[in-house]
Length: 423
Image: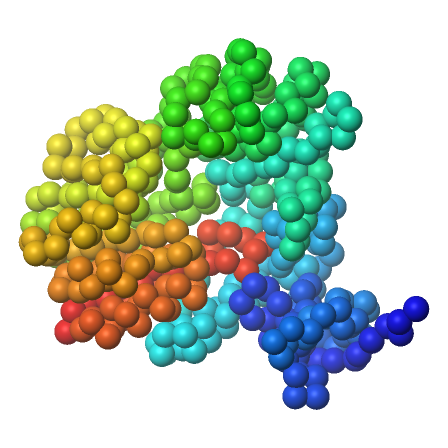
């Protein structure tokens, strides 16, 4: 049997991904579930490309803000990685990660505050995975660094109504032997209504949506095939959800993106409106979803164009604008890259708002809109944000402000809003 490689180290800081960083004889060592300044004993588990990876084996000198993780699945479920830190310490660690990442990756040196959130029960949208043992379904999340599922009975990040639906979700799927059911998307609203999307690997069983409609708090069900998630599939109950933010009634569904944190919607819109400043003729909103930013932007511009490739989100965006009596917003069902390619040579917007997925913006999109006077960039991926801000800066913009919002407590992720102006 190979001898275990145990080392005593001191953690310098926590870096992107929530890993503690230490130095080991000139080698960089990354360890999960540790905190800055802690002296710990770790087992070296892997070395690759000049970086060693360690497993925490014992705490020699724990941080004063270390706590017992409140979730019984912590360390097995791959969803959270900061529950062992008090919430104030989580915010401080994220500030360090954000500041250092922006400086190292984007050459941007600015102080950044992070607006805190309620730390549990905040997650409006959530995807759970199904796995089968004989005739019993297991519902849960992927384990860290794995596609194996850790079954759960409840999740502390879910609002209460979402958690109350979980046991019966499992019971119905198991009783009806819906073994093709692979994933479940939950949308839990502030009023406690729950909307559910069932994703099947193959043909949807007859009446699947109706079978699940009796779940607690459930107002609407979608049943779709994974490979055809843009299609209607089966539906039962209400056709869409509704929630009001800052006087605007939004329509939403489990198949469309919506800002995930129930408690931060107004904070995000307040930040956007404070950054808009003067009014203008044309504003654009890329990756607009159901119009979360587009609709309040309409108060400041003569015309808003929202770009979104999900046709279901476009339908709901138009329904939201109609319900709000907003007539100066045009939504376009298109990917941002092809839209930008076709837009070359046309009028630059006075303001461009972007909220892209983790991949960020392509260089072609940035080049196409490089002459836009003002850009507001939302991102939950610091690395691609820093890269894209550097591209905008190289094209003649300067970063005038950066704000951050803790949309994802218990994880190392943070939402950032960067304001750019053309020099």
